[in-house]
Image 1 (cartoon, rainbow, N blue to C red):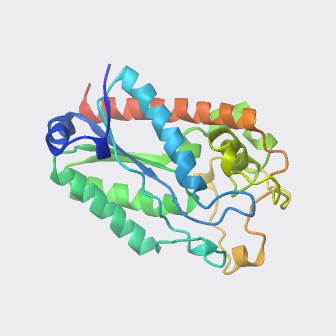
Image 2: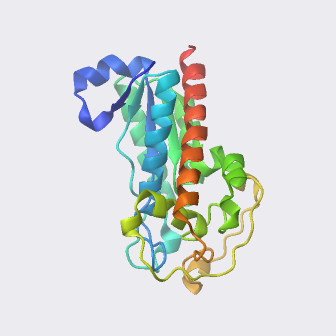
Image 3: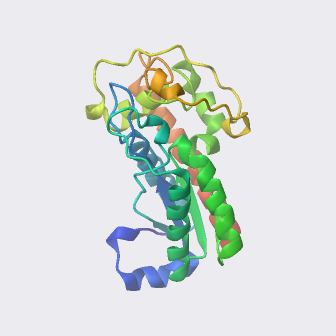
Length: 256
């Protein structure tokens, strides 16, 4: 029904024509350590996979959509004790998001949906979206993909392999075994026992202790039970749920 344009692959004229009726989709990732068995780009890779499938599904129902290049850096200061982490401070990330939303608004976008793939980005993203809707002629929305798809991921069995979403544990390792298996190392998966999470993560009380990540192994749970087939099912369900959220947002934002 609708079309999905990759922003980086079309011209300014094509963008200007499509922008007013389109929803701009922004994927947020990170570049940070993910234990001894996963690459530092996990959050960006997984989020790109989820967004690609979600936009394809949403565009089949409604649209059009403009898909921006992913943002590969996020709020990751808690991982700085480990090599490979490139982090933006909270205020910097908030400013970056504000500038990206302001830029899109300047050339005609009237609706933006951000899909987040890194837990540290969640709070700045919520503030940036709320501020943009106040300050710009925009309808702004979004959330972390696992928050949107929480019930579906639990139903598929995400918590059978570790914490949801965790960090470099069974959940993320399963996703990477499905999405980019060649990047998953064969060893280094052993970690702490997972703390089960059965509620929406956005509703949990904040508990942030200085130096906690540096004192630990840098992972949330043991990834030994990670499974590629489960990872493929989890990605598919995440794409379906985010796709539904995108289609619903587009209809409401554009009155179609």
